[in-house]
Length: 176
Image (cartoon, rainbow, N blue to C red; front, top):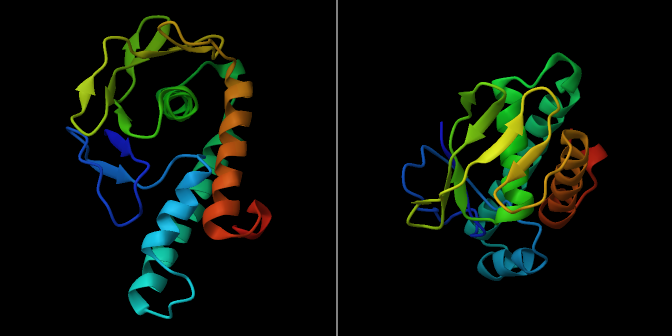
């Protein structure tokens, strides 16, 4: 399954080519909350605005729950599975490559998982995949920095917790 993520508001669709599942805002960019809230005014009382804000909050709470469950079961010692590679590929994409694009399903390549990437609204396929070493969990991309799985998961955890603070307006411990 190809997942797409965009820095657009919850009610806009990222038209990334081949996207089968569209994820809403995945950026920790501090300008995003104000951008979203310009479209939906929390104090306006309009049912439409309340629904937009509710959808945004629900998305981020669900994203947190999915990540927390996957990260809790994560174990480098038994080798990196396809689903763990997908978790790491998505986290690396968010950390290093931006907010609009898609990470294709992990492809088995002997000692590593390779995840081809699509970028931007046109879904332009990038020439280099994200790579996850099956034995060590080290994640890399072309000339980008290589990072251990545990460090990347900490970065992703912090990003998602920040999204909860911005979009849901409450700390993570209250989201579950």
